[in-house]
Image: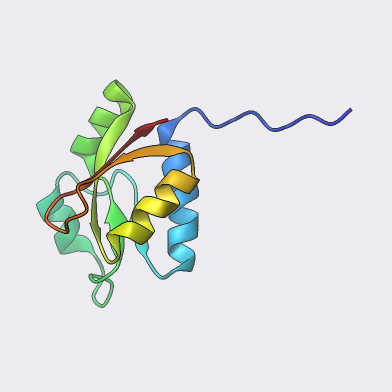
Length: 106
């Protein structure tokens, strides 16, 4: 008798799954990265600022409370959104680089 692995139900695990795919495409990915966007953006390593995805400590609080959060990003927003959806997350994003991508459990 074979059993399927239990579906991931923690959005942090789903985000990590998407990060694995994005890292293979050259993205710098971090979870609970620094305290805020300003500090996190300043901490991105030199040369990595054109392709990154992260959520910071304030977003992590939303993730625990609401099971969803905003992600800061640079690169190809559609590529990022596709990886997040493939991992099982619901993605809300207006398609513009001026706005962060919101993810939550599907």
